[in-house]
Image 1 (tube, helix red, strand yellow):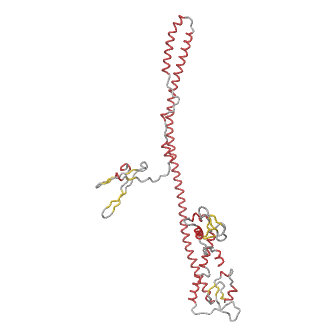
Image 2 (cartoon, helix red, strand yellow):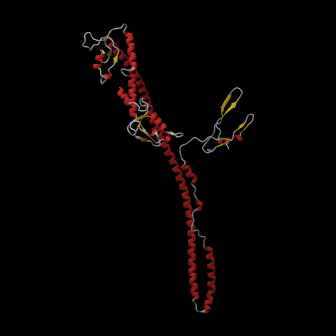
Image 3 (cartoon, one colour):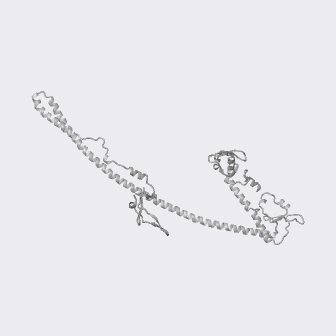
Length: 403
């Protein structure tokens, strides 16, 4: 045990490791001892965080620290567990102080008179007085026989050695230990059963909660799908209505343009016929016949030119259907902000506008959530000479007192 304890001792504080750090060189060091090493390296007005390296006290290997300092080094969890078990064995082991006190108490209660106990392993006659009784072997030994039969090696280091007692008392000591262990086991078993029952209850609640989560999540998903389908249906209906209006506007514009195209074609045909007659008259060599037809043709050409100016329509080659302009910016913003309901912000009371008279109180407030809040509940306290009365007014719609 002493050899093991030396292996579990910190080279700085010479105590059992406490919160040991595993250094890169495979040695270990207490966290507080490592911190003291860093503090010893600090200059005046210098913080511990500024130290980036130190030497291992065992092998002098330089340990480089990261930005996290000592927290960046790994904890030696295995070593800590060994130390915990060693301390537990030291406290409750066969040669521990508690066991010795219990054995002494047993000796005081059971041995009413001083009985001389002789060594049961000696070859001498008479045998020497016993100095220890091994409860494990159920044999009493003198000093020489004890050293010969119980060297400081395994498995003898685990034997229980007590003050010498007669053989008749060893069995009683074993029974006492059996009763203590039985009571200890029963107590631990009761605690374990109780804890196991609590864990089973907790497990049932967790399973039930998982089922509720599944059901509630499915319900919310179905509701979300239903609401989104409704929004999509509304959008499709509005798209159909607006699309119908656009088609009607297109048909009306095309009908008007078709009439204008027909008028233009008719005008072009008449003008082409008149142009042909005028060109033929210009080629007439007989002056008398030319004069007879020229005046009539000139009047007709003038009338055709004037009428064509009236019939030419105003043409807009970039008809963008401005009367059907669409603006979905507000709707897009609302859809982008679509999320679960959250509690609205409380209204802001405007104290400078609030008034109070004998039996009337006027409260003014402003709210940023006037479209999402249906009503407000006003709670106020009436201070009297004897007691303070807290009252809650029925819900008020925002439009009653809010601004």
